[in-house]
Image (cartoon, rainbow, N blue to C red):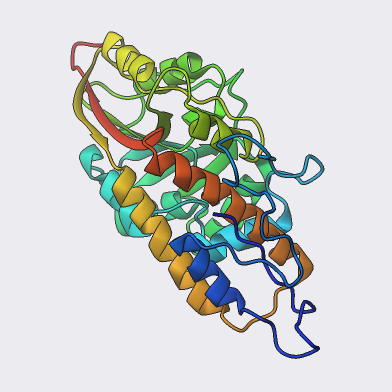
Length: 319
């Protein structure tokens, strides 16, 4: 199920493009392959002949967050966001914290700052956000300044190998799609869990493999991600949370909801881009992003990857 984009110059008999970009994106979501005229219909691509054969990750010389991709993900997911969700979803995730204007929330995996700004704007609380990417942190600052929230929604770059936080300081911690990017998950979780006040929760939204050893489609998906990823099943994360003196209140599989949001966003993107020409950087980013989501979708559908939401409260007696 690969999508081959037809550039504006690829035309039949000098006429109009064979398929508009919007139609090609919609067809991709339905599982069709659309290729430029003259291409080999039996050619490879993401999900072509087998789960792993012919799978190639993004080009090594393409930065994880190059300008084309930064622009594209905000077109797909909305200003300030790099993945499915949106401001309302993040505010909903923060509800267990019981935040007020005097509280401070910790967010790890802030991306371009849309979630931090949503919490600061809708709830009025302070947000200390952190992300691995300097490029995204810079964009998060611009987002906060634009909204007049640069003193309340502050996102900084962090190094997981030297990450330190005040203990028992935060009124809640939100971690969104960041653990998969961390090799030493135990160390990051230890730091984050210790930073939460007794009686307050951590909320984790993360992509996990369904088995300790990733299946072939999950492995293919991970191989095609941008940058290094370190997949894990949920069991060791749950075990560490419990051992750190937290009570797990919620642990649910939200794969269907997550992929549904993704499907809606890509469908909307198809409508917005129908009949439009893209510059080379954005077109290249779009092709790479569709290939990435192609592999993810196959692994989700096969039950080898899942999105889970975990809510756990720190017991009051934990110091």
